[in-house]
Image 1 (cartoon, protein in one colour):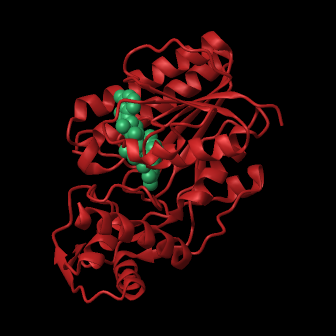
Image 2: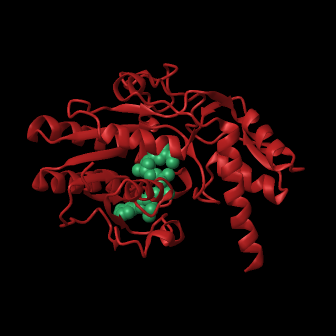
Length: 318
Ligand SMILES: NC(=O)c1ccc[n+]([C@@H]2O[C@H](COP(=O)([O-])OP(=O)(O)OC[C@H]3O[C@@H](n4cnc5c(N)ncnc54)[C@H](O)[C@@H]3O)[C@@H](O)[C@H]2O)c1
């Protein structure tokens, strides 16, 4: 395969850093663009000296003039704690950031990939969610800056595709976990693992009967590259995630088991607009990309626990 120069926005984040790594391993050059709002240098530290890796500190709400062969647009805070910190900036990153990346792709005549989200389905009235489901999003609630920002970004991608014949690839990502997740961003897998490793009570919202499906990061990145390399008429939106569904309570119990923790479960009120169930219908990804996840929750949790164990160990030594 010929080597390409690839822009990854949000490349210092959780998913972005894994994507940069995967693209370099496949023989490509990576230009990682990040404003370090939630991204961390340590996520890409091991890539900094690599001859095929370049880092640029930049906020994608401002225009970017670079020369690349392909664009992956991942820049956007992804967890409620982070995207609700400055909701106006979240919408700007999703919408103006998308316009800037689409403009760049149009000028360069290159393919552009958008990291959208299962949050575009809101609190779904259809279960599991196929891509054809239009969603049930509260446009005024505290999650709207993210949900509506991502929905508008999808609209922009499809309008650039129709109006300017731009080559686009839109993926709707479902809950993903793995090493380099943020330790304190309130996402359920990292929360539970950190609480279990510290022996602190594990906080469950509501009674823990809401369900989620968890995809291990390596599986997800395989879905990204499969979509990017698929024929031009496969534009998405396409669900990528793991359809195996677990209740939050089951997840907590498995984490306690795998960490050997003595943590107890504590129950807290449900946050506003918290979806009751979430599970991808991945039949389109299976049919169009020949993709499906392969890493079972237990294996992925063990690798993620090992990462947090080392991280907390280092923090204790400092
Ligand atoms: N992790 C998941 O489960 C999940 C689920 C659905 C969608 N996504 C999407 O995937 C993408 C990556 O998510 P993640 O989990 O890696 O989150 P993350 O917060 O770890 O990464 C986001 C990155 O974008 C950077 N960023 C934010 N605003 C920016 C801006 N204006 N300009 C430049 N860089 C900016 C951050 O510094 C960070 O490095 C996001 O677009 C997110 O919406 C993630």
